[in-house]
Length: 85
Image 1 (cartoon, rainbow, N blue to C red):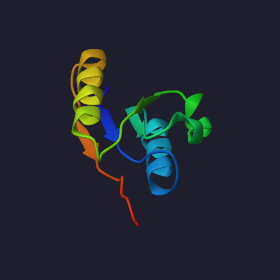
Image 2: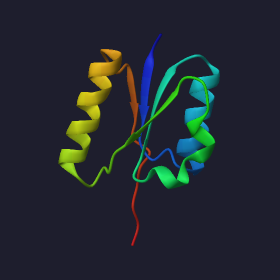
Image 3: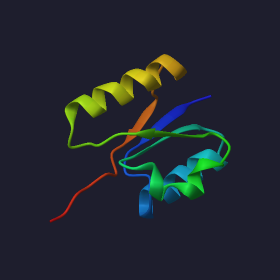
Image 4: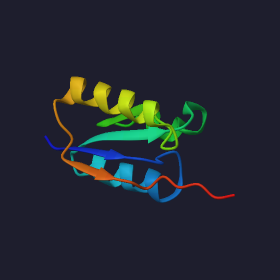
């Protein structure tokens, strides 16, 4: 089974992309800054929630390390996270 990591999965395009890949049978690593906005993804088959803030290098390193430890590899990364001010 292939594994995709999607940043910014709490809502919008990131959430919909996570749901699509899960429906297609992929392992989906859905990253969010906060778990409180990710209820819809929590109970979906093949979706695994990880906390990660793309503005924090240590957060990225820890998340990637955990994913590799659990799944062995990441086949695709979709960098959807973004910030605005």
